[in-house]
Image (cartoon, rainbow, N blue to C red; front, side, top):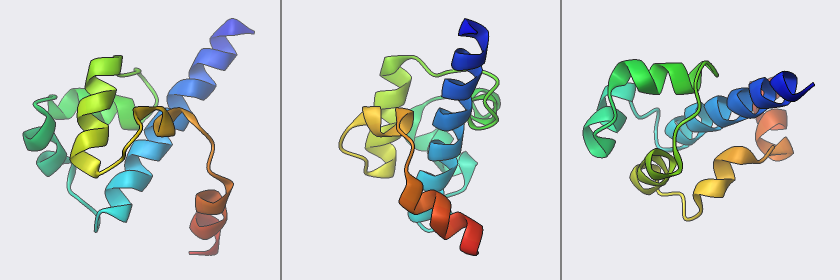
Length: 87
């Protein structure tokens, strides 16, 4: 049960990082790497839900993507999910 919750949280974070990059004009992962100092392999693992960034890394990602609260990445955003399914 706990493992499923962790996996779901990782997937939510990853999906939201991808969405935030898309909202920034499809910012390439490479550019996010340059802005945050986080390696591209790690960013890829975060976006694919394989790993979860530390709070420090999440804060750097949020800052680079213009997100005020790093906690945004941990929340479900039904409005974005609806827009994504319409595309």
